[in-house]
Length: 243
Picture 1 (cartoon, one colour):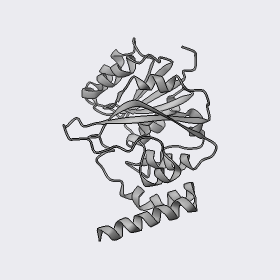
Picture 2 (cartoon, helix red, strand yellow; picture 1 turned 60 degrees about the vertical axis):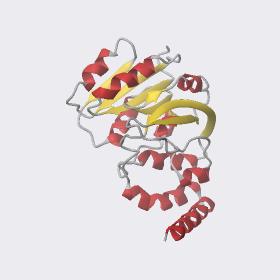
Picture 3 (cartoon, helix red, strand yellow; picture 1 turned 30 degrees about the vertical axis):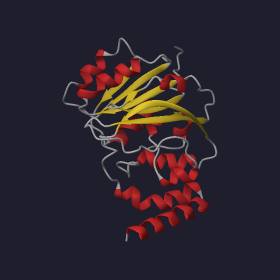
Picture 4 (cartoon, helix red, strand yellow; picture 1 turned 90 degrees about the vertical axis):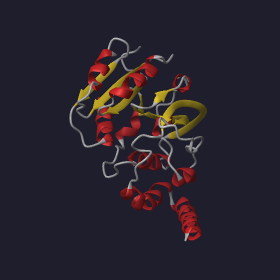
């Protein structure tokens, strides 16, 4: 591996001892190994950090453990700690699939986002609900979120952006809306399953009322008036049908 890894995998943790070992095992099993793992822990009181340290001989690791202001604050810290040319954000309860290495092997353009397919799973046994995945146009991005676990972001993105702590649950969605409207970065889609995403986690099951109230303005500002008008018309029709 070169001095600067191709990919930094950033994981925010807090009392995730039940999950972090499986997450790190799936990373260690990847055939693509030009990477580092950055663990940003919120001051866990269980065995999370003991488990993390036990992987130091198998995976290039960086970590810190201190109180933070939530998941996105932790991810912003991870961005500052990372040295990879692309950054990838993973939940402790998510699992990389072999396709992650296939997508990683395609990385070339350091001004491009490379993204694939997210597979959903429900640790509580619920049936699949139909996670949004596949190729995203500007309008499709306005309608619904792509999981950031599907995306390898060039590090250059974070010269211009950071996760907005105003949004406690959907800051990653806000970031992606803004990026899909930013012509400085290409978006390259490959139909490759890269990760198994836990649909029973925090972000999948909590609303973000502040983001939802401000989403139309974010769409107008980032994606332009045509996308905004089309989105608002669809929302009006949806609400009218429900009333």
